[in-house]
Length: 241
Image (cartoon, rainbow, N blue to C red; front, top):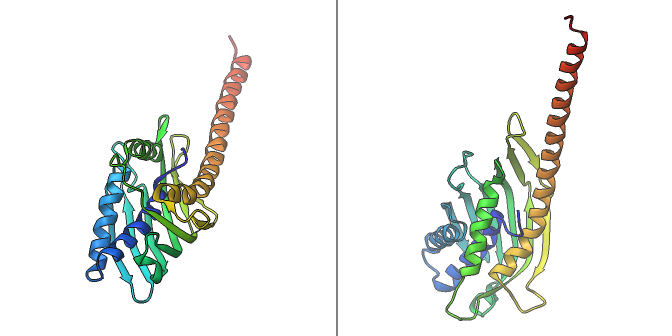
């Protein structure tokens, strides 16, 4: 599935909230929400929506509710990703500086639909779109904005796997993922670097779970086919002319 996948939008959310804080202190939630939806949709090539964004700049915290990322055309599950709650801990003193610092990003109860159709999945299609977007990128030559994330945590992650190899969708659990000190040693990571740092361990966990299940399903299908062939052969051996 590559190094980046849809959960990378979690970092986009962080970046969007920080940008919104730096721009304006009033009507912050509405502005951050629009940035998330616009930036996320442009990055993934699918519709991105959030129910609400609440940022308390004076308390150094923020919260994003009900982030949903739609599937690409041709896939039939309800969505590619849904996250009920994202909590942000902000370093207030850093928000006026060139490199804002996020103390912690907590992503709780993320649900990912991995849908296989033929030789591709919905996540592959989104990842390919994101890769093309990376290559075309910003051609202005302006310095890329940077960010520091002291800790990223993903808890209670789940993947629902829908595949032609399975008789019905199956739910797989993801282990908790913790990534520390993103951009800390280098004076800040670009948004792309931060995304990759967060996504690599999440993707590895998701890929391991999905591949293990599909491998079992393929082996089971092969065994069943062999058993059916053997049964037919035995029947032929004992049939009377």
